[in-house]
Length: 173
Image (tube, rainbow, N blue to C red):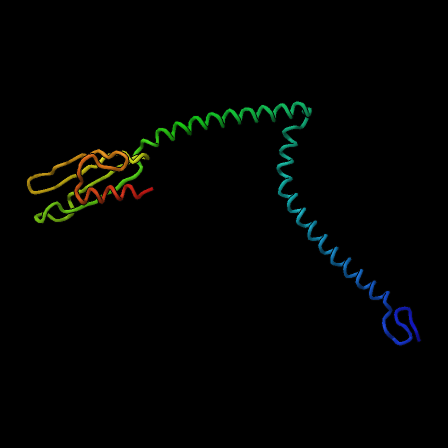
């Protein structure tokens, strides 16, 4: 006997399959809508304190007063940025001459004294200018030498330890 959902052979009618498909699509859309609403609620919860703070600051003011305040604050911020740019340029100028890179080599100046009591210390600025300070310790005393470094080159011949200290300082880029 045929029913509302089955034909005489007992198979489901096509309208039932269509209805089930529509129901499934509706279920998927409902789940997606719930997930989207949950994400929107989370974003709103993050923004709400900012909006409340803004509302308290502008309460009782006209839109013209609020906009004037915003433009005043933007102008002040722009002036502060200009001052920071000037200060930054001055710092860059000063720092280009500051000693930034250092190379140090300790060594024994002769076979009589051990302990690496002699040293070569190279100190360079941002332009690779600086100095080489060398101390040679011996039983007779201690001798200290200073050599100038310009553009990463020594103005005098260097001992092997001094050349190593210069190479160390130059490699610190």
